Length: 413
Image (cartoon, rainbow, N blue to C red; front, side, top):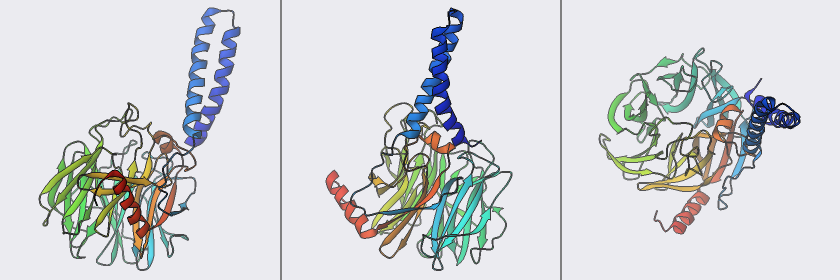
C-alpha cells in the first residue's frame, strides 16, 4: 500500500469510525465502556479532520503578476521524484533527478537522466543506482567537455548522506561506474567555473557544521581552498561569481536537528571572498527563510537564487525546518545584506532542489514539487508522489520585476 493511499484511508475511515465510536459511547449504559470509546473516537475524528485539512486545502502560493511564466510537468509517474539538477550541453538539456517511494532513504531509490532539445519532449537515456544503499542529490557539470555526475550516498532512513561519489561520460549515454571521491566525508554541491580552467565546488561535512571550498582542474581530483563557514549546523551551500571577481556563497543554517517544531534561528548564511578565495567574510544571516536546496545564478550583474521558501515561520511547529510547515519553491535576489523575496513558482508540500539554464532571453527553471493544486505540509509531501516541473520566464521580465520589488521595499540594486 502506498503512503498516499494509507493517508487517504486514515482521513476518511478515521472520521467515519470515530463518529461510530462516539455514537456507540453515548448509547452505552456502562460508564467503563464510555470513556475509552469516547476518547478514541474523538482522537480519530481529530486525526481525520487534520488530515483532511492538510490534504485538501487549496494552494496559496504567491505567483508574481509581473512574470509571464510558462509551466509544465516533465516527469509525473507516481514516484516520489526529487533532488534535481539540469545543464545545457551540446545543444541539449540534460536533467537528472532522484526517484524513490518517498522522501526518506530507500534501497529502491535511483537516479534518472533525461535529455531534450526543447525542454518539453524528453527521453530517458540513463539510470543510476547504489542498491542496497540510497542515492540522492545529483549534480551535473561539464568539465573539459566531459559530463560529470556527482551524487551523495546514504545509508539512513532519515537521510544523512555520508560521502560523495562520481561518474563521468563522454556522450551522456555511457557512464563509468560510480566511485567515491576525495576528500571523503564531504558532500559536494554544484561545481562552477569562471575561466573553464579551474572549477570550484562548495562541500559540507557529512555530520553538518562546516562547509569548504574545493577546486579542481579535471573534475576528479579536488583540493581544499578554504573554510567557508563553521557552526550553526550549516550544510547545503551554493556559490556564484560576482562581476568584480569575488565569490558569493549562501548556506543553509539549521542550528539544530529539531524537525518536529523546527528552530526559530534557522536562516541563510551569505558570505563573500575575494580571489584567490582563501578567506571568507560573513555578510549576513538572512532570516527571510532557511534556503534549502539553494541554486544561485547570475544575470546582468545581479545574483539570484532558486530555493525552498517557508512563508510562515513565527510559531512552534512552523519554525524553519518543521515537518508540519508549508513549503514553496521560490525566486530570490541575493544581496550581501540579505535575501529579497521575489515570488513563488507553482509548488507546494515537499519541493525545491532545482536548477536553471539560460537560453537567449529565456530562463528555464526546473524543480520538484508535490501536487500544486493542494497545500500539503512538508511531512505529507514527503510521503506522497511528486513531479518534476519546468518553468520558463523572460529574463527581461525578471529584471523588471526585480526593479519593482526593490523600489516597493525602498532598496537599491
